[in-house]
Image (cartoon, rainbow, N blue to C red; front, side, top):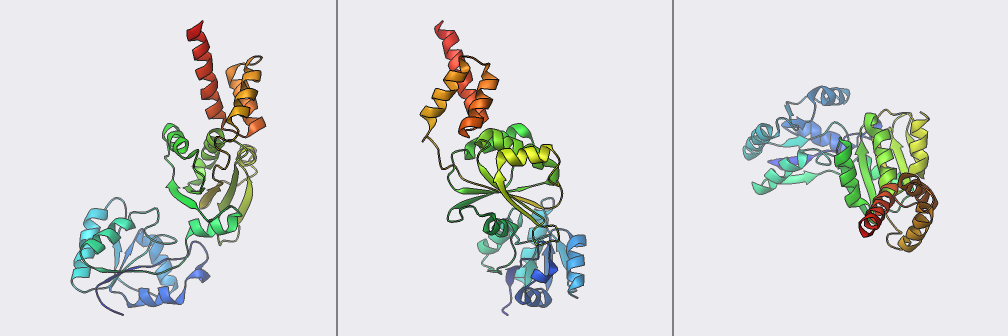
Length: 283
């Protein structure tokens, strides 16, 4: 192996048997390993009898750590970058280190290996010819709903990571924004004993979470179908919504129209409020 190389080494997302020989060979040969969490990665490396200097590299120290790693690389050393699980530089600050290496003429070598997003997509049964990886949505509801509104008309399959304690709230916001009829695959604990891959609808998953029929624990990936009906049925949506608005309050009419058409309840509610406001102004 050549010197002065930054290696991106994918590690198992749950099952240690997924550690490939080439990844082990690189980790055994480098001069140092940059890790997201030294305690977590230390256990992994100990399992494979790998003992190397560890350099913590994460969101809170990335600038100083990156300079230290770059200094080693410029001395002709070989450094491997790993994350807590899966492929480094995906939904973590590792990409900035990779960029710094490129900018300073350091060779970068990316080893293929486990990635939760791709593993979940492959097992979802949803279209994979076009997909958009969105990482983690904002933790606060208002910012999360704003981000989802931007994605509401996206026709590509969408991939999200989510924390267990936010799963129910996120699925409810997805259903409100995209419509309950939109398909979703819940991927949980991939490659582990209690792996879950459930292809369903946003409405059904939201109900299952409300009824505590889904465990909210472990690593979670959400694969959401893209919007394949945008603008096709707006005329029919409007017709149904106007009929219901003649007899029902805005909130109830919007909710029923969403159930009938699969269109976003939030979108229908906003449309109904706009119409009511216009009627008031014209009166």
